[in-house]
Length: 222
Image (cartoon, rainbow, N blue to C red):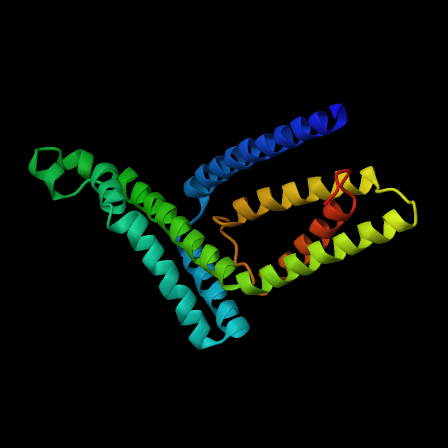
């Protein structure tokens, strides 16, 4: 009982650390890329990623994924007024010139700031698209997840009949690998690099293998 309680406490601590570290790295990455990534580069990334998506799933499915991403983006940022509000607050328009602040409105800082705001919204739009791509593969992910869990259950049953023990070392490193994959996935949502659409099923296979190792080597009974 003491071991189970201690293991549960450690597990909660690991997941809380993962969540905090992932959010911190995500915010740092978002701020860094918003300040440094050129707007021309974002267009190139979008074009390459779209080409990869069409090649991987076909034009029809790519349109479905893109339509879903656009709906999410509009629902979260356009209809709520957040996108328009950010430009209204951060980028001057004719109102500033009309208020007698012509010199301030003509400052070269504003075009640069407008480009940064554009990069921020591009990053959020790209994140919506990548989430839509992840959602597209959910049937494949579900099948592999169930298969991994069933395989882990079989291996545990075989181990019980053979009087062998689970490996705490394999369990330890498999859990940590899953946590780092979770953090990496969060960071890749807004990464300004073209991501291949075929990377999702490959990642799902890796996660399924690690999940099987975690379940098969868990110290608790399934």
